[in-house]
Length: 478
Image (tube, rainbow, N blue to C red; front, side, top):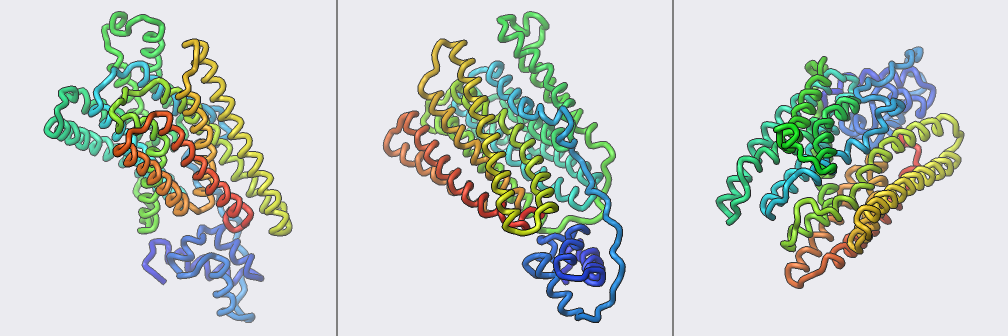
């Protein structure tokens, strides 16, 4: 037995499972139902999974072990986020896309140094949100939603303070180490505001307050609509567009604090493995951001970067919108596989049904992404009269990257986050190798986008093989 924070609880549950079960599988189910999963079995008892743990303990207790009556079914796990059946859950894709459109229309063009700072801030804030969500879910796994709210609130406040400090240091370093004169106090505010919005949005989405996030975006949306209509926001209101964006950021922050009311100290501390998984998810978010934003990074590295290029942003828009679809599909897939576990009588039958379900949801996601890409491409053609080759290549690349991200989300849900991290690390290394090659021998944008597609296709192929292997194993769905 280790000094794991759940050790005492796990030992109590194990004793009851051994005494109240007639066989190993029933004992394993009792352990899982009481929160002793494979991770706890490894961390506390040093065995591979709960089945091995149950088998070992039942064998040690012998046939004459003391018997007790099974306990009543435990209460449902504590929920923090809104159920996916609510109508506002399905606007998440739009909520992901709106800030990108606002920034495209309202943020003025900046020089490469300022662009690099903004892009770097986006990548780090993206990764921060992944790590925070991972730890918050761990508190929910302990049925302690009040502690999850406390952690989300503290992570938001600490994150904003860190964002301001890092932004200040980064801008000062840029002024000292480069010849740029474009980075100013406004750059600090831009970097800090970007990070604050992403962190607040993560809290609101985690707590199921999509409607509040939509309300927070209204000032920025209003500025966007007026700007696109050719009516200058400042002339009408006396307030510049960036001030409207700042209002949206402030509202998101206030709403996030409101959404985390009822916070309280955790009932029990999280163990070191949980924090390591949070760090792992931070790394995963970092790699996903670098992968998705490779076209922008490439434009920056080759020194012809234009802040938020229209072709890059609009080609990525269908992927961003489709992430809302992906979340809904993952919830449905989880529910479907749980029902299959209850309804099927053999592992073979379950495997066939799970594969059919997997193919159906993969096709639904891919079809949604292609349809959104066609819709955005048609809108671009209608507005500009033509769609250039770079946009088409980017749309094709993101149509490959999207299913890869969906497969990665599935694998993470099935407990294979470490393997996903390794695969995405290799993908980012492959993209970095292209940039090193381009530094020696000039490469065109078309060549960069082709390489982006090749790396994305290879990543997708590997992830699809792993998903197919994992979904057929019933124990991975516990």
